[in-house]
Length: 74
Length: 186
Figure 1 (cartoon, each protein chain N blue to C red):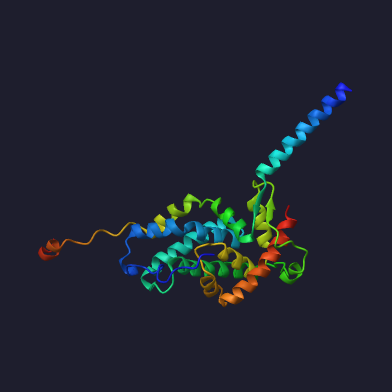
Figure 2 (figure 1 turned 90 degrees about the horizontal axis):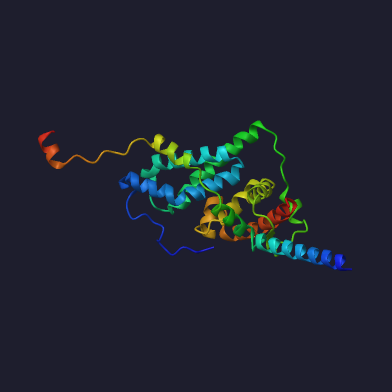
């Protein structure tokens, strides 16, 4: 009897723990858009895109020539 | 979805005067939105990466043509949508795609008014992609655009060539189909 009650107590604890875990990880989204927003917020942009873009765009434009350089033709 | 206040999206300086640091800001502010659209529309991370790069490169080269009539975000989406649709059209011409009939799923028993419940978020991206892949291009694009809170229904309508009312109507059906497909991925 004691063994049985110990087992059922353990089973009860395990079941309660499983329910708690499920309730923690379960999420509800009111709409498809909300689900997609969550997904988008957790989807990082690959950093390689910025690096490739930098190469493709090329170096930054040089600053404009000073007026006195233009005046003296330097 | 937020409705934008009048004039809040217009550029304050003509595009020709944008310096490279402003282009960096343009990229920083919009890359996530554009990449996400490309990723979920094209269903391929590598293609999405290439498409995002190409979209921003086009934007950089065409900045002088941007007149500020639409928001920058809308303008970028226009470039991205055209680019991604051209890519998909190219694949469609070369491969046989199973054409999902949205009408079949619209009548499916989907508890569309019930929240979408997710027990495990670990593989959520895969499930979402699978559900989106089952949609028609039209419904997929609509949901992805509407998911961007910075776009109004009017702006979405302009991007998909529909009136705001038509957008709302199709959105209702798209949600229904998506929910039914998403339930099947569990």
